[in-house]
Length: 114
Length: 115
Image (cartoon, rainbow over the protein chains, first blue to last red):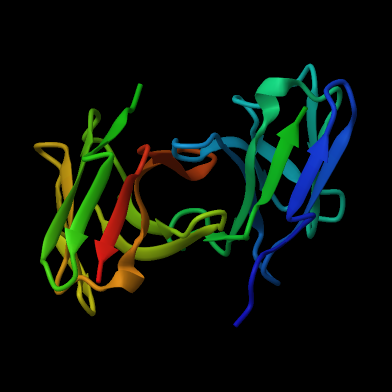
């Protein structure tokens, strides 16, 4: 069964350093999402792509976060510089159809900022 | 602004018990509602998706209901098992004209089923 792949699974960094997360969606899925989940809370959408275009980044802290999906397939989320409050689980999801299909989630990247 | 609340935040039950998890939302103009399961340190697994025109969905021992007018959904788990222990998340799907469905999550209910 096809799955959403994410790497790394765990990342420990010091504040002010740069970090990057990678996501490979299920083949053929045009829509890709990045979520941030703080411990004890539900995920919150950071950015949504349709193919290579950003369709929603209203909750993305653009002063330090950036996301790209250059060829409309895999995607990278970057934080520079990392802050203590960025410690969270970063989840990637993809869907075939933005309206009717469910979102399939990857295993996530657990980020700890020291 | 749409808000999603799940009660209780945590629940511990003995094996074999039937249980109900609750989800409420403030804006009834939702497209769909979805229940997810999350194991510790893992991603989310979709359990049930209820279309806005539907009242309920069933999958095995799980049954989810939706009452849009009252802003409520429930997830019923029959004959609970230790393997059901996980966090259960409710998400409403709000339709955005040019963006598709946007998931807005509750904070989850952490379920522990004791042998």
